[in-house]
Image (cartoon, rainbow, N blue to C red; front, side):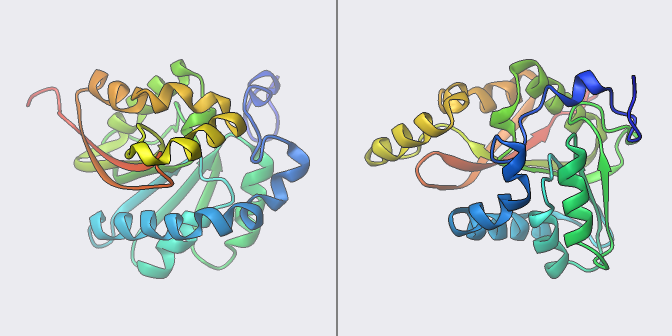
Amino acid sequence: MLNSHGISAARENTFIPAMHFRILTPLYEALVWPFMGRTWKRVAEEVSHRTPEGGCVVDLGCGPGNVLRCIRRLRPDVHLTGMDIDPEIIKIAQRRSRNKNISFRVASIGDTCLPDASTDVVVSTLMFHHLSTETKKAAFKEARRILKSSGVFLLCDFSLPTKERWWLNVRWWKRFEPEIEPQLDGQLIELGKQEHAHAETLFSVYGCISLHAFTFKKADS
């Protein structure tokens, strides 16, 4: 059975809401901004730098649209689309982004329904660690499919710890977000390799949250 957004009821129940509990979803941005606000801005700056004039940016798992609004302040010329499987967070994103010319859609990260090679930059921020391994694989395939040959997938999430001195911080994150463990062991880089992507780490914060830039080899290259 499909709801008004075209998402099956069974599929809706497979995702983890922002802040893990639906009652906290409206508070997500306010609660997380003190810790991640600067990181969201740095991700937005990198997206802005890599998007050509009039280009297209797609945010997979966009949440309340905070990164997209940061991008819009830097780049009024680009086309911005945010996608998330949670209809409630999409409603929040639409409300907070009113009059900013940003499109939002309820969609699965592994099935965006966008045309092949239609996007200049795909971005995702602190959402991947909530996904199953199979969904992460599907997301990499989808990013590769919708990106232009010159495009880049900018993925900011928990990843390989960058410095040993951060081990106490890493242990704290693992207690709060136990699902991050595979990514701390290098899962994101490995998933990129499976899709023939070259990975570059652009920056890291808190010892284990990194922004990776994945560029994909095309079939004829």
